[in-house]
Amino acid sequence: MEYTKPLARLIEYFQKLPSIGPKTAQRLALYILKMSENEVENFASSMLDAKRQISYCKTCFNMSCSDPCEICSDMSRNKAIICVVSETKDLMAIEKTNEYHGLYHVLQGLISPIDGIGPDDIRIKELLYRVNQNDIKEIIIALNPSVEGEATSLYLTKLLKPFNIKLSRIAFGLPMGSELEYADEMTLAKALEGRVEI
Image 1 (cartoon, rainbow, N blue to C red):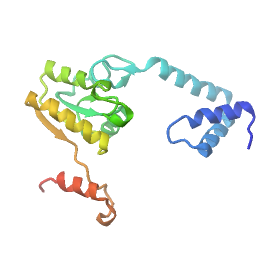
Image 2: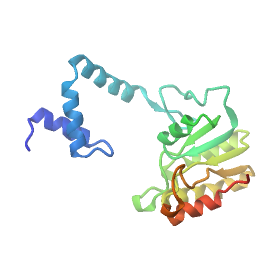
Image 3: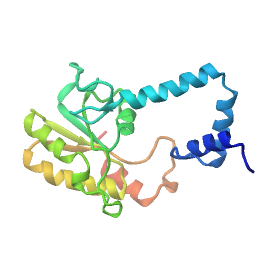
Image 4: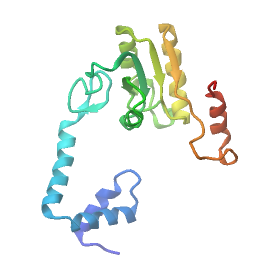
């Protein structure tokens, strides 16, 4: 179907967003057209404000409109623990648990030779600087259990071992409510590896 040009352009822009296919893009575009002009202006304004005001914390590389970010400047946080994540969305997921009260370091990617991303392309040097300059007692590596995540975790472990600090990884395994028979071998292996005493 051929859309009128402004609608086609709007659909095209929605399709540029991750995980948005043609049907979802069309649905979103049509929803926007049903909104009041004031709502659309506020929506557009909030996107522009976010784009203009949000940058990266120079300490942990989390997205923030302040530097240092809200987490780095929170005096109630345990400054001796750093949780290493790949992206800000991973930090947000951990924060939602309300179980972690230390600091973070956002690598802004993972080592991926296939994609041309090496150790110098992500924020590893900055992490080493933080560990060297501060009284860090533990580094928690919280990277995805993918090939890239494993490669980055191994590389970080090698670099951090000489600092003689506690290195740990988040446990991977079976989600609540799942059944063993449907789990793949890697998930089961990680679940066994990350077992804890009861």
